[in-house]
Image (tube, rainbow, N blue to C red; front, side, top):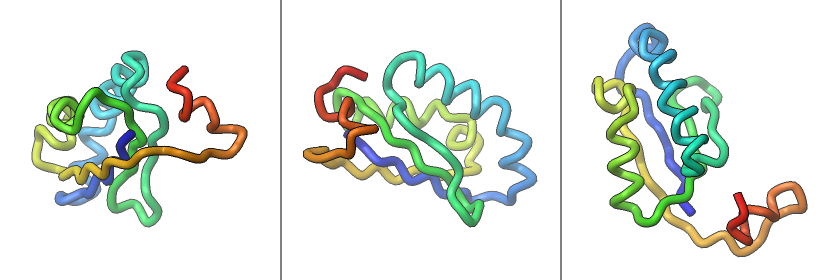
Length: 98
């Protein structure tokens, strides 16, 4: 499992222009089962994505398709971790049935 820290590197005006295309990118990856949870950070200086992928390299390739990244408006940091515990609401993440 991966935690992706999305860090904006361009002004929010640029981010807002790219937001519709970014949301389409997110939706496509939710449908594919890659993205599990996502949302903006507070304060609004980036976002967070919880993801599953076959490898870090595979996920990096997917993230390169994000309009934010493609247009140089954001950079992503990928943190890999092994989920070993979860509350009842997220227990499904441990058994791979997402």
